[in-house]
Length: 302
Image (cartoon, rainbow, N blue to C red):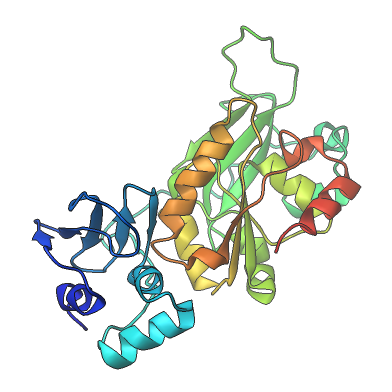
């Protein structure tokens, strides 16, 4: 593989400062008097321009410096510099074993879908996900979904409280049991759909996923919060997606917006910039949108 520092010199960088894991240099794609405002990782070439708040893989830096297309930047790196442009999955340590739950966890669940049907989700959609309500235990009064891994082993549960929650109550709307940072839900149902469409829509909650699914949009992955996990990134790489749509909640407090920007930066370590689109729901979340609104929203995906 081509040496990162030599590539930088060939591009025209000078006065390169060498640190433990990165190089620092004066940008050549724009004017700046700060010789440490841009960093380039020694091992991957991943760069950050702190002055412009932009970052990306080495081929994007080449694109900026040579003012060329992404494809030409990749060709230049591979043919002239011997740098192989790759996107590699991030695997968990092979010796770590993640917990599974007992197969009979859902033996006492009541398959009553009225909570979600009351929120506009078709009962047939609900039957797909094999959830239900618990009358006792840790998930009491919650419509609970079994979280399965790609081998269809039960690795967790996620439950939505089905009764109104008072403003000052400490009852959480959603409750999860299991290592949700390892979940790839519902990839055991829709992995083939994501692969066929070569596109994945990342949403914040199961409620968002249900609303999209019910509107005929099934290439969805649930984030279970704001942080895009490496498990999800691995799923995206595994299914060789060409397009990733970040659709976290459109909150008034901008939490979803800020999280989407953070997730965007994280995904840039593994995917090209033009593969990633931030596209918020037109209301606070997809659960508040009608089918027609969701279908019109889908048309905004480029």
